[in-house]
Amino acid sequence: MKKHMSKDQEFEIMKLVLDKFLWIGTFIMGYGFYKLISMSADFWFGFSVLVAGAIVMFLFMWLLVKEYHFMQ
Image (cartoon, rainbow, N blue to C red):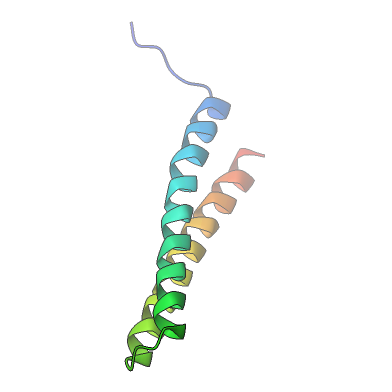
């Protein structure tokens, strides 16, 4: 017979997984910021990577908050 997880256990696992994606967004933003302030002549590449990291972080943060409110 299969064991089923409780909603709290599912949420804790989801938090662990999404936390890793938030770190990925942080690293993407950090790389974009580095490219933005470095002596590189390509300003738009650094800016676009910074914006892409912010979008990744926002999407996964929104997903985490949405699931958190669902659990309450």
